[in-house]
Length: 380
Ligand code: UT7
Image (cartoon, rainbow, N blue to C red; front, side, top):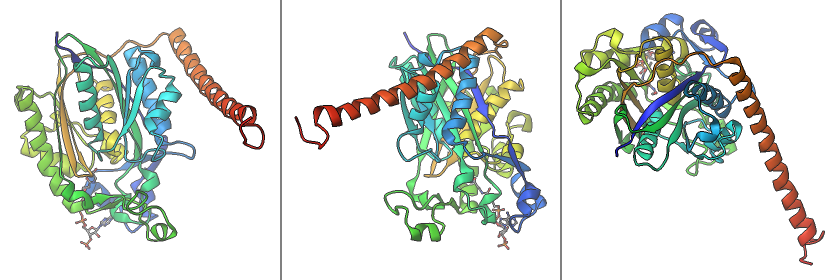
């Protein structure tokens, strides 16, 4: 019996705060005209104080769970692909697990630049088709505004914040994730990176003064790499699935630059309507861009049951990857009010459960210190 990983839920979260090109032209030496013609971006969304990668990931995940009609306790695995985790550790995926109340899920973060979501999809799909797990939540979420140098016009006009999520379920029926392909070339690590904050250059006054905690990018090099990799990875994944470009209904590329998307479409001889683009409104949201675009495409009716969709990403590492998906789910009917209330109650209980566990942990360590070892720390 062979199992297939079907996409049964999808969701996205876009922060409310809008930053337009005109706003940026008041911050750095740039213009709406330059940004639109060189990138295709008009505006991007930024988090407000208190919002983080985890909080956005949870919003997108809740939507995906609602579409799938799943309870968080049914999840076996949570993968969060991000280059802007809340902390280096613990993993953002564990924060998401706790906030959702996904009591039976394993959880980990995945760092593969803007290709992270495709890497996550690949891993989750393989774990499901091997029979190891039944249900997986794969999220791409970024708070790029917190690692952007807002005085560097070459990068600050490009990025935005947001999160997207899908739920995969193992099923004997044909369809779902048909094939995936991944690749990397670490020799290009220096063309897109965050130089400090890791073990190579831990945070210090000097790293902060030199602005090494912000994204650094050689834009033209990334551009050339992307224009080559999108068509190559798309062709490769279709070949692996035993299909051709003629079978393709929609290509969803990583949303980095409209010129990159159009050049790749030209190489593949795809008409504009066969390639999804929304970066005009959100900018480049790194690992979040593909799941946000995927959710939006389904919501707008651009993906129908039976369609063949290819998602293709590229980014820091360097990394790239593509996934060919046969869409097997129609748009869900609206969730009844009582179910929405039950779900809200579940999330409130998850928050209460989390607090109780923290309290129990505190009480247990208090008892260990003062009960077992006595007040001075000596064993009784
Ligand atoms: O997720 C993956 C991450 N990144 C990417 O995918 C980015 C890929 N690369 C790109 O999208 C493009 O290379 C950029 C949009 C970043 C830059 O476009 P470009 O056409 O490659 O411009 P450029 O870097 O060659 O710069 C051209 C000129 C330069 O001025 P000079 O030296 O010709 O006088 C820049 O200083 O444009 C100038 N420039 C700007 N001017 C106004 C660079 N940024 C700006 C700006 N506003 N924001």
